[in-house]
Amino acid sequence: MHDLLCGTQGETRFLLGNEAIIRGALESGVRYVAAYPGTPSSEIIDGFAVLGQQIGAEVEYSVNEKVSVESASAAAQCGVRSLAAMKHVGLNVASDAFMTLAYVGVKAGMVVVSADDPSLHSSQNEQDNRYYAKMAGVPMLEPATPQEAKDMVLAGYELSEKYGIPVLLRTTTRVNHCRGPVTMGKLVERKLEGTFAKDPFNLVVVPMVGRKLHLRLLEKLDQLKEASETSPFNTEEGVGSWGIVTSGVSTLYVQDAVRELGIKDRVRHLKLGMTHPFPEGLVAEFLGRVEAVLVVEELEPFLEEAVRVVAQKCGFHGKIAGKEYIPRAFELDTVKVKEAMARFFEVTYRAPQVFVVPQDLPARPPNLCPGCPHRATFFSVKKVFGSEVVYPTDIGCYTLGLLPPLQMADILICMGSSVSTAGGFSRVLHQPVIAFIGDSTFFHSGITGLINAVSHDRNLLLVILDNGTTAMTGHQPHPGVWLTKEGRRQSKVDLETLVRGCGVQKLAVVNPLNVKKTQQVLQEMKAGLKAGGVSVLISRSPCPLYERRMLGIKQKVVFQVTGNCGPCREDLAQLGCSAFVWSRNEAGETCVQINEVLCGGCGVCAQLCEAIKPKKMVV
Image 1: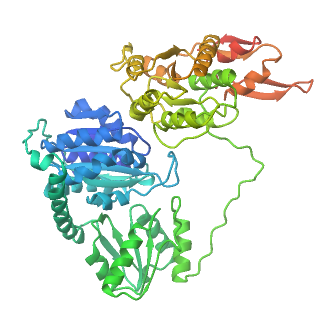
Image 2: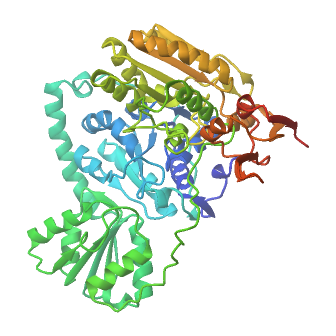
Image 3: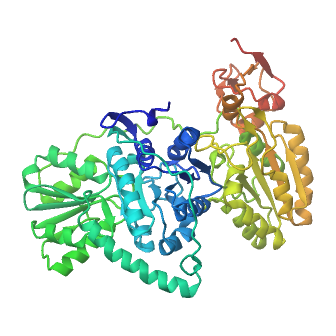
């Protein structure tokens, strides 16, 4: 039995924040889980995918986040508890459904997990999704620890069902990916089937229905304000006239800072776990007990703005500060918070000595894995088309094509943007435009851009990098997956058929590890670009890590350099495999060797250089 299904009531387990969210949903009797994987939320859907059959729940790797919210909301509309999980930018994709879902409401509990990523550890932007709760008009809970993450999931379902509204659980990377003690509760029986009551004049949101539902939502918000005032997740600790207001993981930094600054007897700390609707009465009472307030929160001044409004309403005349002392960008930590608190409260504080990294140390940027087929695709495209082409790219492992020596990424906005921006570039530029998109990203949000390009006769080449999985977030499945534990199979959604269905006439499929054949096809497509229209190249080769994991394939050969580098040196440098080791020979010439420990055995380098030969691996 899976670890998350074990544990007696009252037993303590050491869980990842995302695991605690899973456990909380299990203890709540969740039946329907849907998500598109995105760091730092990916472990939620991955964990449920493993548990699905054991708990009799429907677990869906949705094609995108909008679909996940829509499908989960349908389950909740039928009286079945559901959960949708995503990273912060995923809620942008789902926002169309999320906004109106607040009007429509739910019959059973529905929790939407939005995992924000301060400091952009694995994201293209840094945004504060707390504003989505305010904009949509839904209740929001913000955990600071794995224990709170589990408890707030349970509370979220109760709130959702009591008020007939989805609940936003807003986490951050440090909560999702930290580990902490979590007390197990009781696992409950899940409701496996639902019923749907037709009610079109409350569920079909045409204008006359929407006007009525908006007023109803405002009534719910008034009721939820009372719930926020008495929420057990909004707590106060400490004594004294100095006030601090926090939410989420910032709470832990403040607790450390108070202890280390030695001001525990002078500070009152209001920790808010239910932050929308904002508990104005609770905060007004808190302001009445302090003389000055520092609001400590990551990213935007969400709490600070609300505290200032309350202060104006209740006539508080003390000093209120936030972003004047607390950085608005990137993650906080205990040192940053101590420095801010020491300055605000005028406490003596000696900053710790910071180790400065010597500037002459070599950088170690992220890189495509040895043997990655994306590297071979980039190499061949650049060999045929050169550097003067505009190369829009997209979100996935292949985004690392940005870095030297490949340098095959010129612009990136969001999931699916490569196709749409390529269409725009092609209308205002004379130079060729070649866009890159991964297979999972294409299913997620690239199809509409391709249809748009075809319908408007754009002149571009779209390269779909089909490695058979959602590789960057952990090898999750998608509609076009063709590798399974049982072996290779025809995918349920055939990529070629789909592309042709979008109106594409010029389509080719290559294996990028066959360099000569790939470049022959690209030469033909180069001529096609001059003729105009949309061309699509599907560059298909499995992610080697995924292939070995799924099929149990053992690598049989590595490659080694058996002679001196010749004219091929430039090609090898452009390929830039991370298994290459560059040095100078006795003649002072730059030459390459291959680190056999890193070599992925793809054989691309051997096709470029006669001096590189295969070598059987010693098992």
